[in-house]
Length: 212
Image 1 (cartoon, one colour):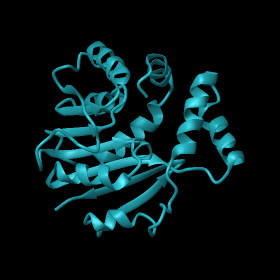
Image 2 (tube, helix red, strand yellow; image 1 turned 135 degrees about the vertical axis):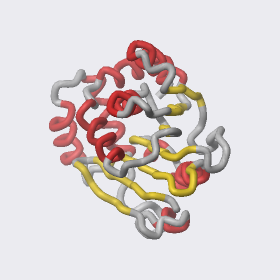
Image 3 (cartoon, rainbow, N blue to C red; image 1 turned 180 degrees about the vertical axis):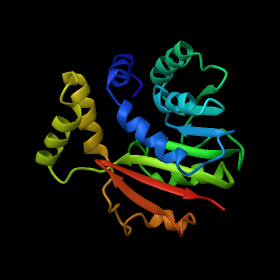
């Protein structure tokens, strides 16, 4: 989403509740927050929520879209969090960080934007330190347009027409439990996720695991 108007519209959407749920679930795992990476940070709302709840957190917030990072920069500056949150332009499929460099790698609703999800997961695992926590959330694709319309009405009833369109487009692009040409989520097993936990919260799915 590298359009300034769309980035501003996206940032204005009320994601506070689901962002807080994401952060609360992460904190429940009692991770080491000294080096956190957020892949596909968008406008940095989740890093800001994490920092507000855990001020000792040190977070790198990465996104490929300049428009999103421009809004993120304003948000981080307005919150006074520039010392805790470093904004980085980069590609989630080719992370510009050393192996094992982060104690936590998290990502919210970016995987469905990646044509080959395994490549993004492989990079997140690569930069995760031994004993670190990988925590990923994304959308489930609705079964049909009727279900999609119901979800848009439920979750974006008070949003603008443009914001509702953005949410609907994300739902249409979201992953299904069965990926093409492979058993459900088999690529995660290939990356060593023998004890993977998958869970659903509303229209969102969590992937979480401590890597040993």
